Every structure is written in structure tokens, then in C-alpha cells.
Image 1: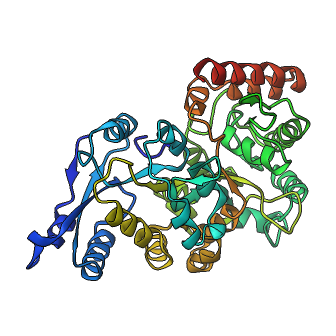
Image 2: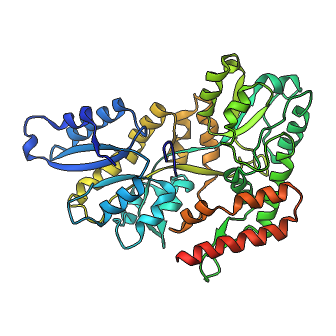
Image 3: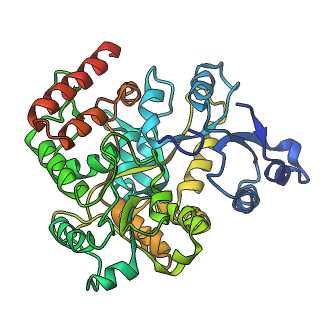
Length: 416
């Protein structure tokens, strides 16, 4: 997942200092690359102290990295000689496939079985797999929810958030009146569209037919997802020719005439900063699903931990990954940083925070973008965005979907 400013090495002094204890010269150093803002300094201090107390032969050297330019830094580290790079690396969940190529990551399949991978969030676990082998170990997640105005819902006679997509449409129609947008949904919010496509059983691209990856926006399931997006988007005035960042939808919501947006819960902070009067009026609920039994599918962003094959501290690196992604520290991190834990069974750990609880409910149905190293090139060209705009402005969906799918296929094959 690309996040924040999505390398200059910057050792975290407070954390590194935890290894300076009597007998430190006898310890083996495990170098860990973590990304800026993924964990608080206090969390890392507490983790390091406990880990080094329990592993008296190891010392942690945690180094904080910037998201900008991290891809090239990781590639260089994976290609370095043995012992010349980090032993554990935090990577975006959707970036794992590009690092697996060339046998550069340690196969952690056997370890993952002991670590309970059947309980992991699918949107974190699936991108970390290749040919049934597990290379990326889920750490934490974040995903979109519906941020809504409780007062506007009450005014419209809506006593509870909708739980099905059809009920969502009905509620949004009631909200879309009196100068209020029922929902602000930009025309090119393709991550939200992806969730509707997955909900229908479709995908953005597939390799299931054995002929390599190809775009599948023209499948019946994907077309149904686009049709729902079209119906929902029409219940507001979101610009059909731009995405959710142009203009930033938090700013539009803060103006006070929007009942709902689809965004990560953290967007609520930006809204309240611009309009403090909305602080007690904002609520959250999971993106509704096709039925009331499960929330809708959502794109799951977040991080996995990987171990380079060129590590000289294999056992130490595996121990660090096991500890950080284990239930105790993963729960601690989720509560500290308002993340979704990596396991479905840990959702109750964040039940006390409305926005995070809504994220956790949706994350159980989470997905990630197609697990191919070439998907980044698709996003750079991104034929999905103009496809969406054309459909929303009246073009034939099937025709435009075929064109966009061919473009996706061409990009994937040209780099394959």
C-alpha cells in the first residue's frame, strides 16, 4: 500500500539505545527497517526492551525509513551481499509481489502455519503469498469505512446505519435533499469501486485461466459493481472527472452539506480541524454488503513484514517477525495507533473506538489489488479512472469496460 508521502537511513536513537546493556557485545544484532509513523516511539521502546529481555543473545537495531523512494531502497537491500542489508523489512502489503521475484525473500510458509495464518486478514495475507508459499507476514491494516453525519441521519428519520447496499441506496436518497448531498463520491474513486466489484464476485484482473494476467473489468460481476457505483455516485455532486483527493473530500465534508463520504476513519480528524462544530456529529459504519450477514468488501491497505534471503541472522529475524505480528504486540500496536489488527479474531481489541471498530468489521472482507509485480504499472497508467468517468457521463459500460480491460492486459503483458 502506498501511504503518507508514498532513504536516508535514520536510526531511532531511543530504540537503539535499549540494546546498550551489560553483555551487549555478546549479542547478535538484528537490523529492522520500519516505516515512518507506522509505530510510535514509545511502542518501539517498549517492544525493544521486552524483546531483548526475552532474547538475551539478540540486540535490535530499528531504523526508520521514509515512504518516499522506499521501493528502490528495498530493491537495493534485497540485491545486496549477505549481511549488508536489513534482516527484517516492513513493506506495503501490495508491494510484496514485486519483492518476491528472484527468490529474494525468505519463505516463511512453515512458520506461518504455526502463527495461525488461517486467522489473518485476507487483504494482508494474500498479497504476501506466491504459489501457496507465504513470504509476507501481516502486521497491521487500514481500510475505508463510511463517515457520516449522525445529525443528518436523525433529521432524515434514519435511526441506524444501513447494513445492505440496497438499504444504503434508500437511505442515501432520503439524505439527498434540502441542499444536502446524500453522499460525496468522486467519479474516479477506483478503490471504492474495487470493493463493489469484489462484492459481486469479480476482480480488476485475473490469472485464473492459465493464460497470464488479463483485465477483467468487462466481466458480468465487475459490470454489476460499476452499476452500483454509478447509482450511488449519482446521489451527490462528486466530480465525475477526478478522484477523492481532487479536491480532498475531507474538505468538502467539512463544509457541512454532505451526509456521507467513503474514507479511512482518520479523515475525521482533518474534517474536525476544519470544522470543529462537527466533532460530536460524526459517526462511522462499515461499507454495507450485498446482504446484512457481512459488510461489503473493501480494499485493505497496510503492511507486511518480510525477511530478505540475504540475512545473516535468519533465526533472529524470524523471532522479531513472530513477536511483532503475534497477538500480544499486534494488539498493542492496533490500540496505540488505531490500526486494525492482523487477525480477524483480534477485532474485539479495538471495539471501543467507533471508527477503528468499523474498519475492523470491514477488514474481515478485505481484499488487495491483483498480486502481480506489474500491477504498479497499471496504477501508474490507470485506465480504470477514465473508464469510470466515461460510464458516469453516459457511455456504454460494456464497451468502455472492454477497452479498459484490454489496456490493463496490455500493460501487464508488456512488462511480464
